[in-house]
Length: 366
Image 1 (tube, rainbow, N blue to C red):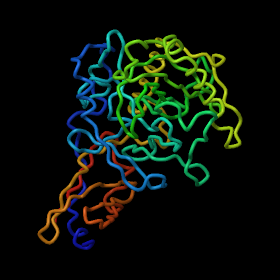
Image 2 (cartoon, rainbow, N blue to C red; image 1 turned 135 degrees about the vertical axis):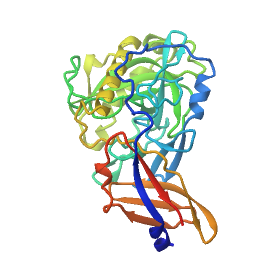
Image 3 (cartoon, rainbow, N blue to C red; image 1 turned 30 degrees about the vertical axis):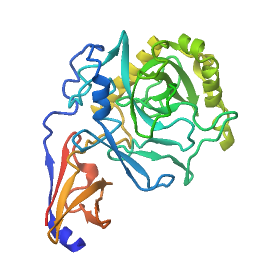
Image 4 (cartoon, rainbow, N blue to C red; image 1 turned 180 degrees about the horizontal axis):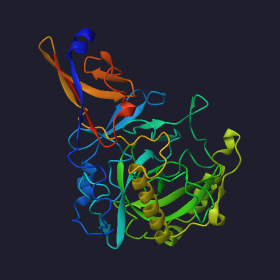
């Protein structure tokens, strides 16, 4: 079968995108425009996930798909502002409001009470979620007494980036080179890779090994308590002790790994919603600079991949290629039968040399 599929590789085409991934970025758009109430349901239905490999293994990856079944990046392709259609433009044209509050999309990386340190792989194509590795070992956070694992649903806001070359005027430290983190404090335990619509309540500034690491405090808009919690003071009133536990958790969670306690800017004070929204807006601007190559990307992957679902016929049977994995040199096609076929694309072009913003289309037939 491998030889047959090798002969079947017809080509790798670079297609001009129908619309630039950064189209319209220079035009000002209002931050808030109201949408129909059913907007959050529509957004939830727009995205799906596809796991590859075994959980609790270095090979595990959770890939994201849009409503058409095409692979997307949770870092770059899911809109920051909720309620917009799955826009081809960056940033999203419209944002949903919940009363006077802006609603954001959150990508859940770590469900509450779990210990595996999962994160968006910013340095891999398509930016799947994977488990972090340090010193060759999978990372798990310790249980900080009296808690079990992460004490909130933990994740990130898409289309944000904490610039490691920008020194924040308030913290005096540069960003941590990741999307901005979110602690969702609602009552429900969320799922890995779930897209949750949240309203922002406040923020704290963790100083983690000399880097600014903002922690957004938010609550899902569909949470039973969301109607009475609107700002950081409401968290203190309706969830007494939660913010103190949050600060304690972040201060101590690396100590079991023989690292010093983390420090905080603002003497550990939680800033309010308005302050938090301004931080989010600034990291969204840094992300746009990242895409426009106005900031040093380092190893971060910003190439958008499309059309990664294919059909192949073998001995008269129609097989569905479940996934295409791309890592600079090889296309590895995982076929429904379990057969793995690798095609070197060195003779065409290294993946890293494909121009930014182009779409990759692979045609396989037998």
